[in-house]
Image (cartoon, rainbow, N blue to C red; front, side, top):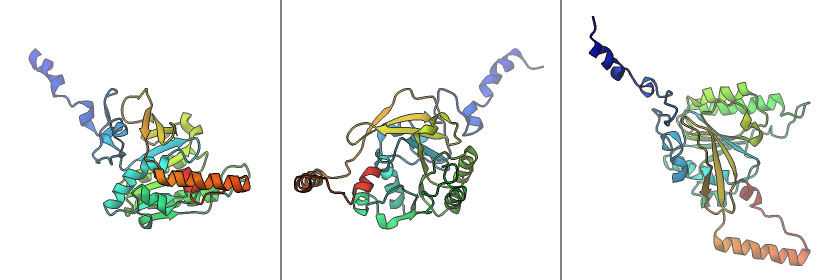
Length: 268
């Protein structure tokens, strides 16, 4: 018959919850992963992300009210690190044209980016939602990229009002992807459940700054928002030159000229 001492010692020998599986953690602790996270390039953000960076083999869902808050600059350090490691970076359906010059300023090699334009963004269905066939084509291409094993990082702008089962399929596909997988969605879905283990809400935090709210992570809730300083898209001299040209155009024509790089600056 076991002694009283053996019963007293038994709890100490039982495995802690976090020893059972990497997806199990205590409510007050950060979750762990057997996959090494990819640093974001922002120390304040890494300190609040499980593993100290962007997760691999999982979706990272970024919610924003509109493109152009600084999401490209937020992701640029990790995308550039992926390229330096000799791995491909793939972009799906960016909502605006990209400027190779601006990409270079952020440390990215535009020639080593693979941009996929499925051509289905502007095809509405009868109810105003994205056309089902177009959505299927986009998601099929994205799933194949995640399953391929040939991509280092994926960044995809998803169609609005995406059904939950479609997002679950992407999360399942992300399990096979040895790298970060970012999906960008509209802010309106923040109250909806998501299979993505990491969800961040982004909003403008001022000039060259981004406010980040952690909606979901493998760990305790984060009550406060993070304010991240972003690298400027243009150098100080380039900014002054652009303002001078715009002022001259306004004086000459009464209207500001369109900027060739404006579409990318909006995205950046």
